[in-house]
Image (cartoon, chains in turn red, brown):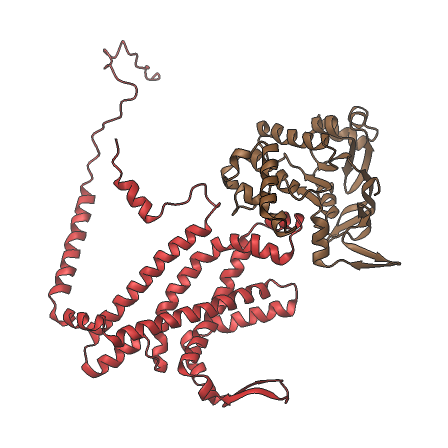
Length: 314
Length: 254
């Protein structure tokens, strides 16, 4: 068989007169399975909603009663405080450990690795418990010159390491190990040419780190740090085991008295969800800030996106 | 002040087991344009990086403007310079890289202003005025608020030249400034370099642009395998290369 004849306009019948810029208006392919899947999902959702709203044992009215109760709100504040302090400690420690890890001094670098190995290799719950029992190993804590020198500060471990301090140490020191790896990855992600250029311009090592390397490393550091913060917010619930009245423990104290476990756990979950949502929004704007120069156009903020979608098109 | 800007005496440099520079001796005078030519891996870029101490030399001596690079000599003892002393010396030498290395998180104007503000601590209005003047000179005054990623390679390289000039260097080093560019963008960058040479800037350029070397270069140095093979006036070296390695290389390039 020969090649198919090229259709010639004249031979194939008179061509329809057509505007060159006319848009194609084709009949779309029918996709019945999509409609079916959509319908199935809707039915399932309706079922869940119906069950959640009609099952009296959820006790939504109790949720409403406790959502803004002072005990729960105080617990929420403590959770937020713990998250902020532990993350702050973790980030500072992470930067120090990352710079140590990249140090040309092998002993310093080794120390950092050993720290990460120890604190990443044991469960954070165990570490929290450990700190709360620290008085069993060191009944007194003192600050002074080692190997028998004079002490400047001296006290009982039970007084200095309160449950709150134990919680901050447990969460923060553990977080430091993870943040160290995140910061190190960020620093390594910056092209060596950037350091070369900065050095060639006469910048000193710390100036280069502060003005050139770290701002660019932030683009790599910020997203996982946001992740860690959100994760930390939820991990703080672990310290309920050492009787700190953060969000979860506050709820536990209440349901230990009134036996309304489910509505109180729902109350707690709602607050965790609200807090993580706020953090995610904050993360989006921080990422956008540090993304300058990395892509040709900054991504629009949700507000800008909304505005452009609402704009009436011609 | 001496007329010699750069002086190298039996400079050797090794990376691990590979000796990259095997005793380089050369002299660059003030306002001279020296072009370094040679096959890849011949040590041209390394020599350039040694001149502003981005790499440490293993033996030999290297002077810029009469001062040892990276070291201080007292009697017959050589002392290593501290980081900030090395940085101060580097601030007087401009360098332009093959891959531009513009600071990606800063606009064009910020790139040019950063070092004078941070290193020389000059007042901002003065730095800004000079930066805009330099951008005008490289033909990019209208792109001062763009980020490097929004520019073409040729534009980025011209910004990089402006950034180096902002420190008012007494010597400019060019490390294959046009090798990463599309052919039609090479001309703009070479024009800027030509202008610099005309203004009397002392320049050392590693380049594969034979035409540029012939027109603008005062001296052409042909390097191969870590050593200087041939030195001379560009036109003569290019027309009548004396050494067979130079001949072999030129026959492939020309």
